[in-house]
Each structure stands twice: as structure tokens, then as C-alpha cells.
Image 1 (cartoon, rainbow, N blue to C red):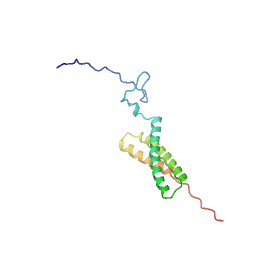
Image 2 (spheres, helix red, strand yellow):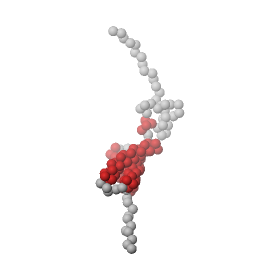
Image 3 (spheres, rainbow, N blue to C red):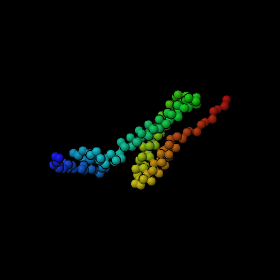
Image 4 (cartoon, rainbow, N blue to C red):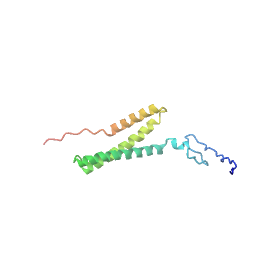
Length: 135
């Protein structure tokens, strides 16, 4: 049986992080770097896009059913779908931002649910309908 000599793995220097957790120039982040976990503007934009996609999918499914039942026209269904998708995206990004302000997982979860619900409530408030004028 042949034995192979022990070769130590090359030592690597961990990247030096600045104030916000981003790598300093001259250092490349490792695959397990914490830079991916530091929230920033791009992080909330990605959350918003994900929320918008989920909202668009759910609203499109509901509005397709409404169209099949002749409860809405194509234009009404499209407008409602887009409005719901945008509201879901804004609610998701806002909830992510607020949740990031808490350290505990329970407080973060409660803040996420409360913020998302509040934003969707405000954005889905319909304007009061004006009664039609009688001739």
C-alpha cells in the first residue's frame, strides 16, 4: 500500500471588512462571506421584486377566475393584477426593512407580519364611491 505525504492546505487570509461589512479593496470575498448577509439597498430591492412576483402570481390567478366567471373584464383584471403586484412588492421590501431592525427572531417575525399587513391595508384602501347624480 502506497502512502502519500501529508500536504497542508494553503493558508488563506480572511478578507478584512469595513464599517458596513463590505470587503476592503484588494480582498475578494469568500463564498461564505458575510457580505451577502449585510442588508443594503440592493437587498431590499431584491425583496421587493420577489414580493411583486409572488403578488402578481396570486393576483393573476384570482383575476383569471374572475374573468372566467364574467365578474371582471380583461382591463379590470390586468389593472387589479398590476396594482396588487406593486403593493405586494412594496409591502415585502418595507417588511424586510422593519424586520431587520430587530435582533430577536420572534420580534422580527411579528414586525414583518405587522408591517406587511399594514402596508397592504393602506395600499388596498379603496377611495369612497361617489353616488351617481340623478337627473
